Length: 634
Image (cartoon, rainbow, N blue to C red; front, top):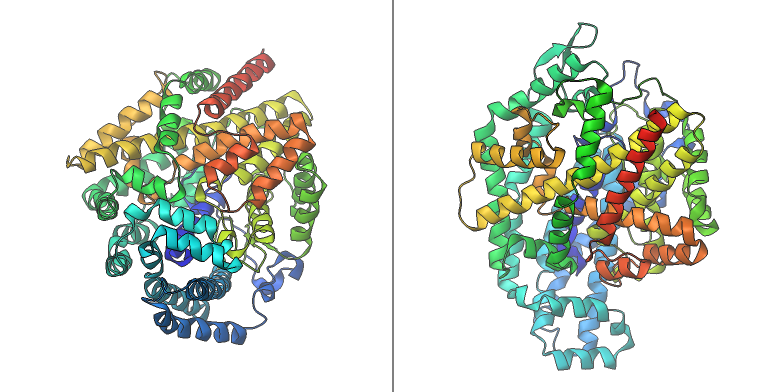
């Protein structure tokens, strides 16, 4: 039954990859600045720094055998159609068969995806990936009858089935969850049609991706030394941290140029995505796109509204930060291209990967011995592909939970402090997936995207606190406080601003109001000004941000960065203050998977995201950091 969400899962992995530690959500490439030195080949890297994919399949032949088994399974689903209400045993047989198919499909996808990312130019790896995506679509269509057939069974009869067979009891929460959304589940034929519509409604997203990653042409500008440099996503992300303001401005204006030139094409894709979401929301009888996006994970819509309303009432710390930054930079005007440049450029340290590992282990000591033991297991058994190599995918990600196989982490280590934070971040995802897979049966061996960034940003918070506590001098402490402030600005305030913008444009689409390039730019510019306050001068280019953010194609996704960040800050404080009781609750959170609703899993860990308290706690933390900075600067 989980297979119907495989494309959402794959999108989720992509989004986690897009989440860049220290940098902003510019693009996946922004995490790895382009190097002038020769990039090594795979055979030049020691084995201990490379993935051991034999933990998934010993050979490609073994992968092919499982591929054939799953391919044959697509036809075998027919034996269960129109029979699930006949008996408890038949229902159990179908669910077990579906589980077995999905477990193999998950392993097939993991192996094909990781192999592809190690050498993007390898046609055999790409071919396997394309084949598994096609097969996943076939299985999705073949199994689409399961949910509507189960929902057609009278509830009293269904629960008698569960009481009758012990094997069905493991599915109780899954069946409860299914019944909860019964009103939004269609007939088998209609569900199959919606599944078949997926590739069509996905065109806006895939076309934007092709334009943004392949076809877009950026201009050439002069770098800090007067040499010509062609702008790219990676160079834009790096340039925004440059201490040369004129260079930042040149890159900033050049970067937005193609998005402004192709605004009519991009607004068509943008609106196409919104209307595709509206199609599914109406087809499933939801009141709004927001309800349709949040209901599957049982997230109350008040969580979304609570985040936006609470942040809107507490923008003062961000306004204060803008004022401090403008003053310390000694600028007459503060512009969007000034928001990421460091105030303390002289503070710079380098870290080898081995030093980064040791630092992460020390920083995460508050999480207890069991957590550190499992972290060491990952470090020592080739779960991490560490260094950049020719053809390897850029950026960083954790592969997520695959039943029966440990999770993997992709890095492109570059000896910067941000690489250490990326390691801590991705190992948070990695441990979350590992604890889940080790402690849950297959139906619950995954976790909601709503909590996906809690464990990762929890690790970042502990690492940052550790570094601040162990800073060698005042200047280093100031630089680390600034990094903390930047994290809050980008992960909390910026993502909430995106979420508020996304809510507004969806509401206008639902009312049938036209969204032209000028209208979208006007809305975004006003919102940007509101968040940054009177110190900010909003350039015309910034108003076209709607045209370049991939996350706007993921249907109410970005708010979860902000809620996860707020939850992780609260949990990190609890762990440090309360010790073992809080550690036990946190580890239970990591182990819970989807055995309970995500909002309840967080509540049991000690954070209630339906209340404004976690949001207010982040606001208070930012004010404390600003107080510290001002005191140190005296």
